[in-house]
Image (cartoon, rainbow, N blue to C red; front, side):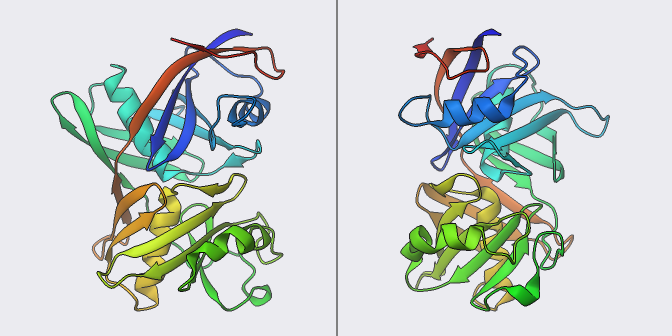
Length: 278
């Protein structure tokens, strides 16, 4: 296949490799995600994000996201913010309101731009769901947490010891209550009202942040009477601002997106060769 140009970006430390598939199509993204995400032998990331043209008039662009283990995710809030920044600052679009097609539906991105730079992005993450039989079998799970779907499954546990996620996260991810596995959040309410949250992402393990996880945590906290409809979710890599609207029941996530570096990699559907920065 030859050389693939990529961009490394992160949202609050949740880092992905981004490829514009209109220029560099990838036939086997599952294999590429596994090889390139390796932090010792590859580029190093939480996964691979493919940016493409949407195949529907209701959206402007599309996103596919593959976890570090090669499994395909339905949605990623941090990645969607990064795509907004990528499209605008690379000159692919001059729109500051972008419709992004994902496996969990079309998400609307609102870019906050200053002097030609995207300072932050607000994403309409849609309506949360506290029940989804395809993702959560409620009579087979422990009663210590609350399930929230943000288009992908999350299980939020409130505790004074959020570091438990490191040992219990992988166990809960594969619990039989979750037919398609699950993202796991351990959260604690702080004195200032913010919510300290650590994340075990399905297919990637501990990550610095998770946009859908932040939304799920905010919804869970509000549902349990632990917080209002507006929350600051403090994750390992930074803080995301979440608002659960009473008007439309949608969850709105606002946070930063950052470039790390551009590069190119040889790819022939085999482990990649050494990287060359550009």
